Image (cartoon, rainbow, N blue to C red; front, side, top):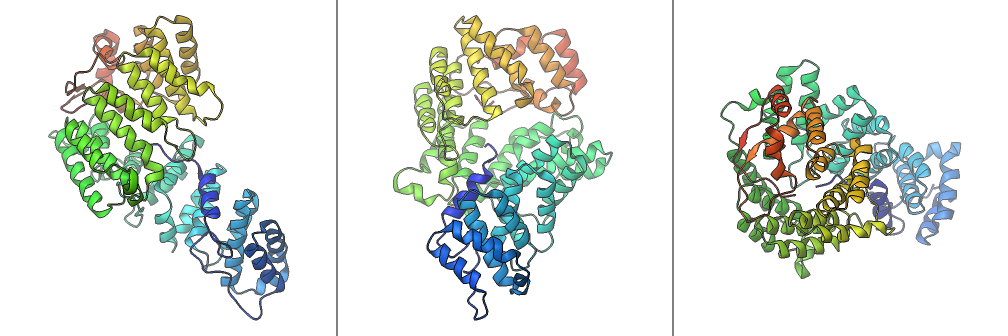
Length: 503
């Protein structure tokens, strides 16, 4: 699942969903007290009247006055949180952040205000400030940290990585791998932090500590990746069995589903593991039994974030079973479903990939035509996926000029989606270019395991599928002498008795 990026949208949603007087938090209304200054009561009245502009003027001036230092901390915190709510509703993030920093100086500040501080820092892409907030939350504000969306921690880790903050990222990952960090998620999310922390420890020469992190990982997808990573193979042992690892993780997910019956995400993850094991019919049954449609939709607390991914899972499962028409219908339903409150991107692209892989290249290009119309907020990664499908589909249709334009885009933006270029060159028949790209990634310690896993030998598809325009060409690529040498240098591929995901 993609990492949630819209921190500002979350802030506005939480602010807009609250009733007047109460800040967008779990705090009480502004406390009643005979000694309250007149500006506090006037601000409260303005909020009740939904006049945020007036309330903000009163709070901004009043809280800065020397006399406000005598306000009881509980009152000051409540006033500031009310100010944050109004500032968010009126899209004044700088003012909201100033109030947030003031409020979090007090023990009486709510968990909501701490989460808002972190969200504003992530939205502003100030990772050092966000890390300082996370560190501060470990000092007696564990509830605020654990209740923050886990996706925010992934985003912070990525921001620190992209900035080159090695020491800062290591400090963050050390926090996120302690027993005290227990994010409120149905699907376990700590393992990616353990993997990333292990990598940093290993590169720093702390190999025993790195291997200790690896041995705690349960996520089967991660274990598969580690099983071809030369640094960590030894931690899994020579008897590592991929199918057994998936079965164990599937059992963990099923337990999570029992504990979190309101989670649609965990159902989607269960179906994905069932597909991986070759149990497409079981995966389809799992998804259909949990169908979040009609009155049942209200039983899922994550329906807004996961409905499009439920349709995506249905589409992937039908495709794995060879039900191409049903897969297209499901992806089409996902395409019509909002994503992050905006026009859908992910399932639109996945529908195009499915059409390409089922031999309907013209349909794939027609599906992607919606991106020519303004209104879709597409990430850099999504643009690379979209251009990748365009390149492959245009090449299959003999539209060499269109294919060349799309390939040039993918080459120019390689860093935005590091695996896209090799796939595009392969599906368009440029084996020399594809080999050079794959070899470069095999020689890159950060990319090596991902490529080895892709090049590994999987079980044949359960359903009757046409030759995949990318995966069907891997054997020819691997027979090249330069590829054989690079694979050997990287530590070698493995036999994986599982299904390869068709998208």
